[in-house]
Amino acid sequence: MVRPPCCTGLNVKKGLWNNEKEDAKIPAYVSKHGTRNWTEVSKKAGLKRYGKSCRLRWTNHLRPDLKHESFTPEEEELIIRLHAAIGSRPNHHNSAIFSAGGDAISG
Image (cartoon, rainbow, N blue to C red; front, side, top):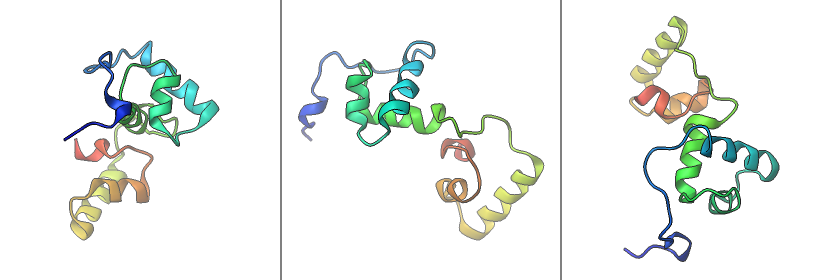
């Protein structure tokens, strides 16, 4: 499989995110320019990451509307009912009810 030209950089950082430095750059850029092109977010925000990595970091950790608290007993009961009705598709559960990323339930 051949990578697209946008992804051929040798200086791409992989692995754990530096919460203080890298995490601050994504929301600052997104608030000004939006989330339409994650390759541009990566390049113009000064991150040496793939666009997909930036998108996943935003979606699962940095979005301002994410709920970071534990589920309430009512939410847990709803998750159990949804699982019985829909099956194990956490993104369907989340998008319908919660302000949580797909990793919140499946983890």
